[in-house]
Amino acid sequence: MNKTIYIAAGCFWGGEKYFSLIHGVLSTKVGYANGTTSNPTYEEVCHNNTGHAETVEIQYDDSILPLEKLLRLYYEVIDPTSVNKQGGDQGIQYRTGIYYIDEADLEIIKPSLEELAKKYDKPIAIEVKQLLHFYDAEEYHQKYLDKNPSGYCHIGQCAFDSAKNA
Image 1: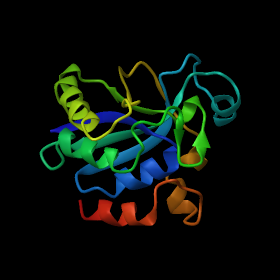
Image 2: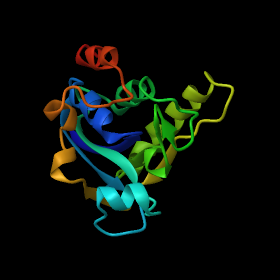
Image 3: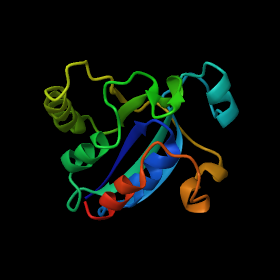
């Protein structure tokens, strides 16, 4: 069955590239989630207090890629204890988060985070909330690293390579 989940992993360029390479992911799109303004621009998200997170919309086939596996792969490319920061990017828009549209996904998300927490001494900082709003990012952000292969990314090439084999 095809499902959709929204994941914030810091800068959305790398998150989109990473998730798009995983077998079972049908499509990805970058945008801004769960903020306080309508139709924000990148400039507004970066410089104003809009509350939006840079987020990747992931459509996937859960018969090929169960949510449990997708979340495990997500945890491999973030620092789940970092607050509002991933790699060199810092600010509320770079927070980590899992935004669901299907309440049943919580039955998978919560135990997954509990298991993840056992691996760390610091608290897990991944925000888990129902998706309230998602606004597509500007076109130049879509598939950014495909268009700009040498663009900045906090997710390393080895992670992209392993995503292809996940």
